[in-house]
Image (cartoon, rainbow over all chains, first blue to last red):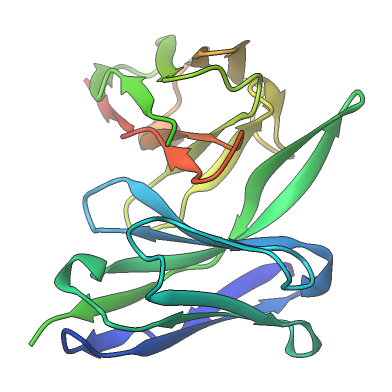
Length: 125
Length: 107
């Protein structure tokens, strides 16, 4: 079965750090771009970060740039999100998601086809 | 960043109704748009990619249309399992941006 399983969430003090992991199974992670998306309970999802298939290119939302680092270990089939200098507003469920390249005619499109179950990060003293 | 504006933010409908949700981008995004369904306690699920292509195993009562700045998700005959929140997501550029969501509730 193709799936993503996040771990590493929990309660963190403001200013603290946390590393989230996302283990892929049923497919080879190295073939796919990956993303992190977060969602405050009761609110809409917000894109956080992207990494290309070999880890050489990354993108970040302005709200996390300079504090969060996305990385991957393709040998371990695992994606990571290192979160530093955490703030109360980083409290959310964090999802990892796979970016699938769809071909329609001769055009390429991306979409998030597989999602993990999410891991909750709470930043509070 | 591209702003995605969905409307309505919520709607009440009955089983069998035709439902239409719209999403407007603050600039042209070609057909680089997906639609996602989310139920409470679950992760979002992909319904439509490339604005109008139905994802694998998604029922044919779901359809998408539009290009440029204006997009539509239509459910032709609402089923009990369709009561959920729907989001559009632009994949034209970074940062990726979601619409604020449309909650479809039972009338």
